[in-house]
Amino acid sequence: MSDANPSDAAAPDDEAAAAPGDDVAWLAPGARPAPAQALQRIRTLCEIYPDLFSAMFVIVATHPGVSREMLGQAVKQFRPDAEAYSVSDMVSLFVSIGTGARDAFESVQRTRKTAGRKAASLPWGNAKD
Image (cartoon, rainbow, N blue to C red; front, side):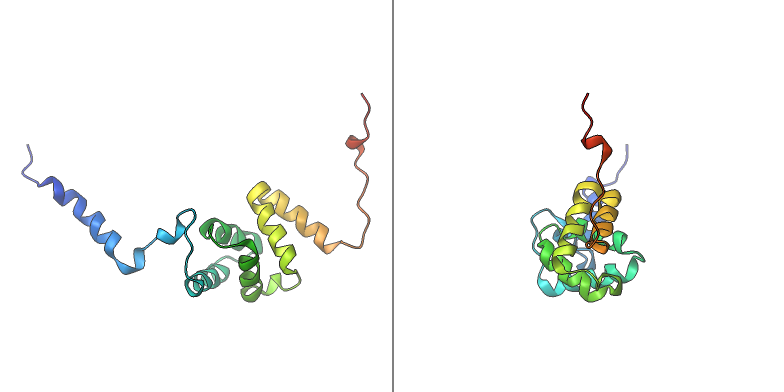
């Protein structure tokens, strides 16, 4: 038998949870981080991830309580490759990430870049079996 106190096993976790930089409560569903904190986190994520999809994917996953419009405005502010998109385009990109990940994201990107062109007819939509 061990002479170790069972409460000692929980001590490191308690100390880690109490550390000021380790607070992750803002990740909880429904959490609403302060706007200044959210902006700083979004700026950091935009700097860390090299491509727009990765940055937006992580931002939408880590900020579930922030509206897509606010996320879109923040990303446009910190990512030069997002300047060409309107806020409504950014919202569509965030929605596409949540529903279809990269394939849907790239599809929305293509439609926004080619908005002046007519959509092609899809052959499988006209089949009569």
